[in-house]
Length: 522
Image (cartoon, rainbow, N blue to C red; front, side, top):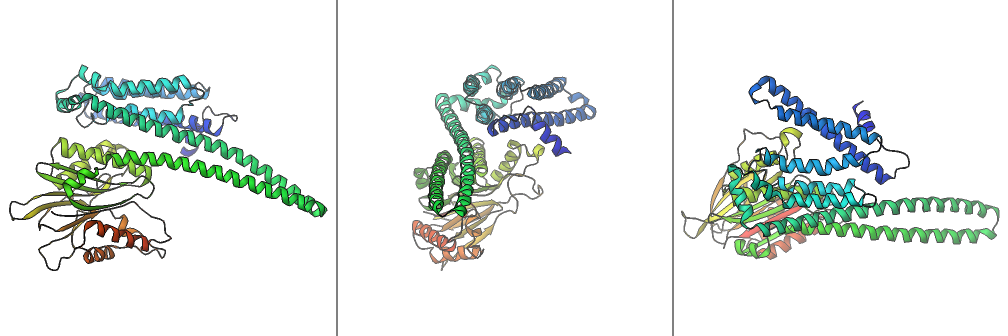
């Protein structure tokens, strides 16, 4: 019954003459307002409960705002029934981004962790706009939404300065310190993301139109072939004629397949552009060479963009090294890597937290807050390894290495031991984000390693890769390869790993993102 109601409301305003693309736009617009009504109703219910349990905390303004939001959503669904779509689109792309960006500022409810992501709210609405607005039929609205959301993005600090808050003053100072560089970076991100969405939607529309044309042509071709077959059975003279026409139709289909292949290449080109964006957040080569010296990074996304990422920085005379495996892969996993990278910058570089266990604890809390997991109950997160490497003040000519892992392990070989061999320290069996055992705390492990010792971290994608017989590469084989080649240079170790992986997965597709990092202490 709920599914039937969901489908009925989702299809409000659709008529038979609408194209498939138009139908999808209307359904998406209806479902957005259904979601607004549902979320508003849930929030209203919690507010009413709070009014009975804590009357002193009850806010009439919030109640009025939520009721207004629900009323507007119901009104827009009613207007959609009569195909008056302009007002729902106008409200969603102008009223909502304005409210979400400016109300927290002028109501004084902006927290320090909100200031880094709330200013990107207009970016989200401008990208959704490509899916809902028909740029051919609604060009003025299309352009106006882009310009207005870009204005909100650029004027965030201006509105922030009109209602300053002491709790976010340090973060505001950081944002204003190098204002134009900061804004140019935001503009570049805004342009690249919107271009990626624009071309993705454009390619999808062209693909659908071509596919529809091809289906009609193929149906006509099939009818022609049937008619020719009947003629073949009537007289031998028409057999050759029918055969020639069949060959012509086959050539036609082959030509259309070539067109579809070209469209597929264009889509892959867009994904490669998205890959460039993701690679831009990864540590650059000069930084890796400076901080890790001798190292290798085996980084192989499964679907162009990856759900694995690595992060590197120095703080308080310590080098922080991170390898993370986010939930999912492809586009969904890539979005999680952007969130994880941003939060690590905030925790380590802004809050100056360098203890691996404390970083994991704070990252877990921030992921749950940013993804609103107490409300939407999603379990997205990541498995992650964090290392703190610095010169040891206890043992001369050695390094102190502090490790904490969230469902990940550390592998190392101490140069003082003869023969050198791989040893393993297990991380805490608790992931970052989602519903976890909160009684289980992340634990630091401290090692003192001699110079020329080897350290290895990474995701489970390498060990979990199967062969044609569905046998995994396995941790034991990985350790065996590393033990055999510990004395070789890091780039040679990487080549040996790649060769072993290629031999193992011959004729088998990659099943997950792969990330494996190794470095030798100088």
